[in-house]
Structure formats: structure tokens, C-alpha cells
Amino acid sequence: MYLDEAEIYVESGRGGDGIVHFHREKYKPRGGPDGGDGGRGGDVILEVSPHINTLFDFRHKSRFIADSGKNGGPNNMSGKSAKDLVVMVPPGTLVYDADSGDLLGDLVEEGQQLIVAKGGRGGRGNQHYATSRNQTPRMAEKGVPEESRTLRLELKMIADIGIVGVPNAGKSSLLSVVSNAKPKIGNYPFTTLSPNLGVAKLDVDTILVLADIPGLIEGAHEGVGLGFSFLRHIQRTKVLIHVLDGLSEDPLSDFSQINSEMALFDEKIKIKPQIVAFNKMDLPSVQARYPEIKQAIKGLGFEIFPISTVTHENVDQLMWRTSELVREAPEPEPVEVMPVYRASEDPKAFTVEEVEDGWQVHGEAIERAAAMTYWEHRESVRRFQRLMENIGVEEALREAGVEEGDTVYVGEYTLEWQD
Image 1 (cartoon, rainbow, N blue to C red):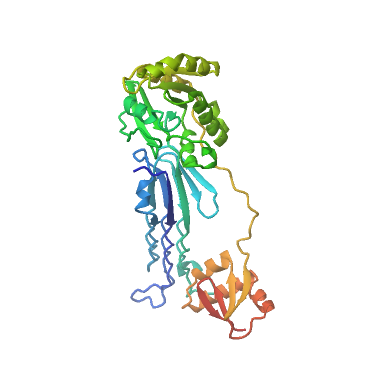
Image 2 (cartoon, helix red, strand yellow):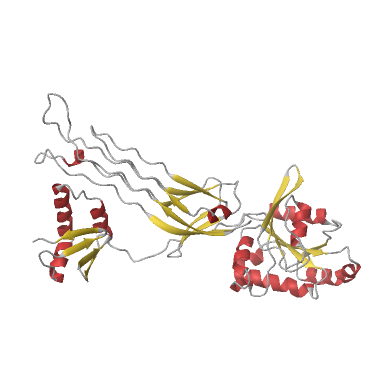
């Protein structure tokens, strides 16, 4: 089964905790601080694999959580950093933040990587807090918390040639004739409900990748039917083969409609080289109308080949001419990831809100500091209190009306206010 959209949850590993420890050795009763640092948490990384051509696997597994770093040890031993979690995706994967809609990356080349969740830094052990005035610091840091986000993955197939046309024109039949692909084929509209890839080997040096794009209908550029899902696959192709149904009531109208839908979706599609294949020439009625269609198509500036996917008439000639156009065509431009402008936010910014049973403090820096504090060590608590004072949280709480004994919530932590 082909799947070209998926939503996944990614979470990096948190950093390991630094520890409070003092050197213990015979005949050295006053060993100095030697608490080691925590290890780094693992990143979650998306990497392009040429051996994958669908997002189907993400239907069964959609949560990817990296390991956390190990805690530090005595004797200045740092905790082991966690391995990064590498998630393989097919070439042509667009990565969006599901909440904001921002485009984070366009993964095209084999081995290309994108870090989508950064592992937390390991916390520092008490070895780093020794000073001339405090030679036995009982203070350390916990690791930086993990990052998490939901991603929307969208696949645009990468193929040399896109086969387009109205439903039931013979696109899948053409793909099966020229390649080793085995698409489902039937004599009814919308036979193909998902794109198919095939490889055509014309000779030792000429190998083409083809994408059979499901039949487009009027309004596809507005998402009618499965328009958006299919039209985006055309964007990365170099050349288009436009298959016309010789039995259609009006092949020229079909030709115009499909080109209009593609141009309305993306103006760059209309400048792609396009060659027309007039299909079903094994039928006498189709042969009779071909001269009229040929003259009209050439009048529009397009080459046309009369073909039959049943008898294989002119199929080889069509593919060789298409291969010439592929060689001449420029490489399709990758989707440009534009930086998203946002008003700069002070990481130390915070808000104080009165809640039913106390006060709630929100803020990136203050919540991260709370998560990295050893609440069982008095010096670590005093350090956190100094931070609250330095960035103005303490003053803001006083101005809001906090009183002795009130409960103050910072992130997931509950504190009691004392003057």
C-alpha cells in the first residue's frame, strides 16, 4: 500500500543529571567535590534512504523517542551520552511542524539529515561549583529536559517522468508496458488511487524513473477529490507524458482541463517539457480521429505520438523521445525552506497568573531552571531563588499580591512562598 502523508511524534532524550559527590579515599578525609556531569540526551534525526519510497511504515509506528543521557558518577566521571535516534524517510519528504505549519526541511538527497528534536545537555556535577569561598558545594544541575513535537510528513515522489491524464486514459497501462511496475489496472474511472513508480531500462546507459499520477479531475487544484495529494507528485518530475484517451468524447477538452489544473496548482508545472501520447490506436475508431487530434495538438506546440498499450505500437519511440527531453531538462528546484519570521522573544520572559489555589509562573527559562534544580540540596534551592530574583519573578509575585505560605507553581513544581 502506498502512503504519502503521515503524522509522527518525536521526543529527544533528556540530559543526564550531574551529581553531588565528594572524593573518598583512605587517609584523605576531606576530599574535594568530584561529582561528574550527566551525558547528553539523544537527538531525533530524519535521514533519507533511497531504499524507501513510501511513508506507509509510519502507519504502524508513529512515536519516536530517543534515549536519555546517563547520570554522572563519582571521581569526575561523566555519564554516557545517548545515541541519536535516526528515523529513515524516503527521498522527497517534506517535514512540517504539525502545530505551526512551518516547513522545517525538504529531504531529497541520499543520506541528507534533519534534526527534528535536539537532545538535552547533561547537567553539571558539583565539581564545577567549587570556589575559594565554597570548597564543598552541595549543588549540581539536573539534565536539560527533552524536546518534543508532532511532525507532518508529506512525500513528493522523485521521478524523471510524470505520466498524467484524465481517469482511465491508460496511464497505468503505459507504466506497466515500459517498466517492471505492476499497477492494478481496470476499465473504470479512478482505477489508480495512489501513485505508482516504475523503472524503464531502454538500454545499458538509459534508465528512467516514471511516476503514474492518478487521474485528475476538474477542481483538483482546490483539493477536489484527492487533488492536492496527487498534484504535488508532479512538481519534482522533469518531463510529463500526457496520455489522451482515444475513446474520450473530447480528448482536446481533456488535455486543456488537465493542463489548467496543473498550472493552477503550480505555475512552474506549465513550463515543464510535455509530450502527448494518444492512446488506444489499436481501435479503428481511434485511428480515424487521430489526424484531427494530431493537427490540433501540434498547433498548440506539443509533440504527439499515436500509441497502443495493448499492441505496444510506438511505445518505444515515445520513450526514446522522452529520454531525450529528460536529458535536456534542468534539474527540478528543491522546495526552498524560507526562514519564518517571528518577533524576537526574550527567553527570560515570564508571566504570573493567580490560580484557584495559589500562583502560576510560566516562562521558558524559569521552567527549565526548575526542572534542572536538585530540590533536596539547600544550595541548589538557594541558586534557584537567586535566579527568580535576578529575572524579576520574585518582584512580580510581590506586586501581584503573594503572601506568606501561598503556593507558587513553576512548571511541574510546587513551592511555598516565604519572605
